[in-house]
Length: 472
Ligand code: IFM
Image 1 (cartoon, rainbow, N blue to C red):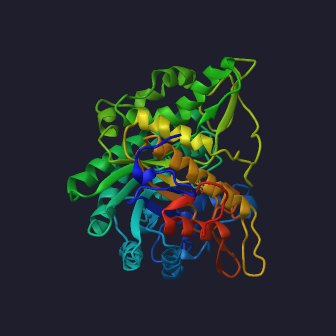
Image 2: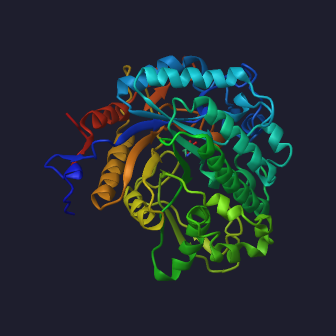
Image 3: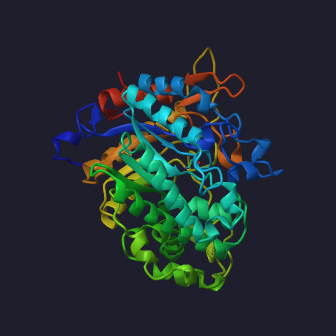
């Protein structure tokens, strides 16, 4: 590949990123905060779900997680030591509105005030996600995202949180991965609230997207001109071995990527996905006049979460229900991962990220930020160190993939490693470690892993090595 842009020039040893590239790491409230009953926080669907026997591996819960609610100053100090320019974190809606509507809990807002001030004091730019899955349980008691009303409650909450932090936070994300909230939460129920109702999961997806649009409208109406709004989607590159399987790839791409991308881009819900899922019943009856315009309200950037490619093939029986979280998916077989896999069994192949970014540049045309990318491996602390070679390779290989996309002309503005800290990995509890910083859950001691030190060097150089995994 040749490049003419000096900012992304391929040098002999280093692949340089654009000068104002945003380097950060990401977390989410329920995964790290702990303190789930402190300072008036209301219960979330994840508190309820984790309390159900068998729902979360090992019976793990959100307490104490990383005890970040109390230890945030030390964690911010760590970010500064790593040289992070930005930190992506989420607000816990039930800390701010314990019942999801009405009464606001001042101690919840005060926590995020303190966190934002601490970040700014250390020169780390806060990037706020409003919803990373911890829906107030009181809203779920009325149907959660299956209920249209939740979209309006979300917009109210977004507006009040934004108003409080607007003088210090410019970069905002509405939802993290609505695919997961809708389909893991309501289609196969492996995530909170644990509902198994595929048709309702598509209705939930619509209400999530409506909530996103309403929230952007509400925040934009009160925001200074320099505020930038976004949504974060979890995309996958869908790979097949033969042409006969291309239609299987279309179906998975439709439910994973286009169902969310197309309405944001003003194209409405993809007709083929609506047709593929029609046998579940007409979920589009929840789409009211004007909803699609609200969802397509302009945003300023798109958050991209990428972990792994997905391999599929056409199934022998076109009507066989594929199972899993994809509502209404038929005639598709999911193939096993190939080559290197992570602790979760996810295939490691950074080519999927370059391919995805190039596709998003064509399909969306917005500035892109990698808001999550990372890998889980079973780390050990030895002699006070964590030598996580596999995660370090994953990190550097994926950064090269990002660089390749930038060199090919894709407008990528930043990269956030998932995750700053090992944390509560949802249904897998604490069994999967994604952190660039190790957390000892007994002592809460943090140990920066080799991957964390590598990211710090990458940030310092604003470049990744062209070959190998070491930076001076
Ligand atoms: O830990 C999650 C995160 O909350 C959302 N994106 C994927 C990560 C790894 O599974």
